[in-house]
Amino acid sequence: MRIDLISEHASPLAAIGGADSGGQNVHVAELARALGERGHHVTVYTRRDDSALPDRVRTGPGVTVEHVPAGPASSVPKDMLLPYIPEFGDHLAQRWLAEPPDVVHAHFWMSGLAAHRGAHGTGIPVLQTFHALGIVKRRHQGVSDPSPPSRLRLEAGLARDAALIVATCSDEVSELAALGVPAQRVAVVPCGVDLDRFTPNGPRATRGSQHRILSLGRLVERKGVETTLRALPEVPGAELVIAGGGDAIADAELARLAALAQAYGVRDRVHLVGQISRADVPALLRSADVVVSVPWYEPFGMVPLEAMACGVPVVASAVGGHLDTVLDGRTGALVPPRDPAALAQRLRELLADPSRLAAIGSAAATRARSRYGWGRVASETELLYRRVLAGAETPVATVPGGRS
Image 1: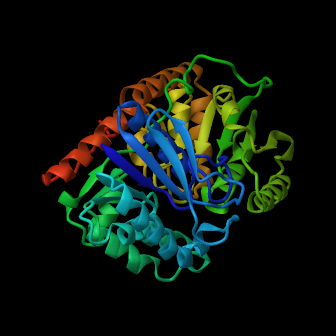
Image 2: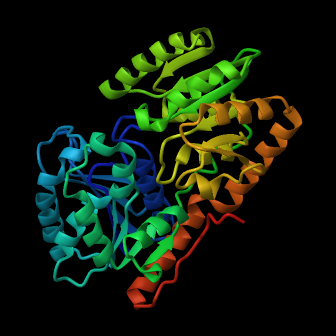
Image 3: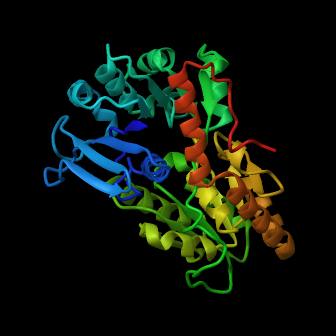
């Protein structure tokens, strides 16, 4: 098949860790790679944000990334990209007149707008993965939500017009149902994990004798690192390593977290290591006794899955994709978001029982390997493409990340 993936702000070539670069970048890059390895011809369209970028970059067997001229050839925050989406869509329309794909898969809501504009009148089916729903973001961020005011209305239209919505977790199905989207128009295929890179065996970052709690990811307030800092005074004998950074927003958050650590009396047990390279992530994960991921909300959450694949127990907030990936008491622990007391209690329980910690880590690695490899994710996604092309009704799928 000729498969075009649209990812307007999240380039598969971008460095991970900035305010607008994270799980979606990894998802698109790995899905494209895995589909290419299955023999498909995949083009990923992403916005040109640097004038020095080539028009096209071949990234692997069957996979090309194409940089679309839409707006200035410079970095623009994703919440300010909407005015340039028509230009993006017009570029797609021109490309698809010459080389129409069999199927288009849009990632994020603005990618969906561009894809539908480009595919208008062609009969090319457009599948939609939102990665984050505006209604959820608005619920948690309120007046601080920087999304364009029209986002909720436009997302509802995309949910109505897409050939199929490919959700990343079962919680998203419930959110879509509340918006009036029929269950038969949604299928669940989660994000995956690179099982060659993230394994229990391999190098470990150096560490001391204290228990190590690790927080890894983008440094924005909604990721809930403050909750972990507030829990730390009630977890004696443990250090907290906070990894992330790489832009002005993250730098400001790092400074805020450092001040909070001082205020909570734990600055001597908190290590702010800044941004680390993607290549160094597995070793850092393996060095931890527990990985904590407690955002206010989370469309999927790739860090817990990567930790699990490394055999490290996860304590995660009971939101979004965490509800699918982390089995409470078996592969980790789930706690209410923004509840430092509950987090501290679960951390104390886990760190006090090394044998249980080891058993949970082993079960976590088994779950990640059996359900979340990118090969399986690509296979299930390909099946959805074929069903859409065949005009078959697609029931809600919970593959490969169900809660069994």
